[in-house]
Image (cartoon, rainbow, N blue to C red):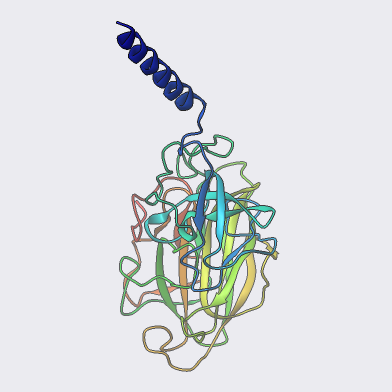
Length: 308
């Protein structure tokens, strides 16, 4: 009988210890997530004050560095699958935001790991709609004579990847202008140069300029102009109607990237998708301010789609 009571007593102590240990321990889901910096071609990541591609406030962390992901949130889409997931990370005593695309997190695109905290509990940036904005042709020229916007390639150097693209054929030296107009009464739209970079992977083909369109501090979408010589600089604020962003360039021949003077035009929507004007035929004349597409709103169900 004594042995029986002794056995039961020891068993009770073991169970109590186990339960206390389970109740008092921090589960892996509650712990901060430790990950590495990846997919940067050895460049590392910038330090960003928010879940957006611009602005930056210096260098963040080198490639393959180990960082601690504190919480996740939604922001600008980066990389394949229009991944809008971002992380607030800690590295070398500093905190900054990094796109999920550049971290070795265990989740798939747009799906935060179970149990990881959300920064501030804000809703996804892809939900709802933003004010609809109209974009006009930046040049007098022709809609591409060989390929339309439903299939034309999009810039690999622009980040994030835009929703659609088309070549506007025009002579070298022609000025390139921004024309954007809100389609919602009372909405004030501002424009800012968000990105400037090489048009072709090899660094040739001139430069591209991405102009972000904003309602207050909310980024609605953007227009990108490639194979140009820019007359604007990164971070510069522009008048949304009639600002000159550059001139059409003439460069060394690069098959598949630059094969003659033209403006490679692209559009992007931060929420939902931008759409293109379905009325243009191959080789049709296009004049400055002619309607090219919409960003913002909820007018397309995916990339490379025409406006309704």
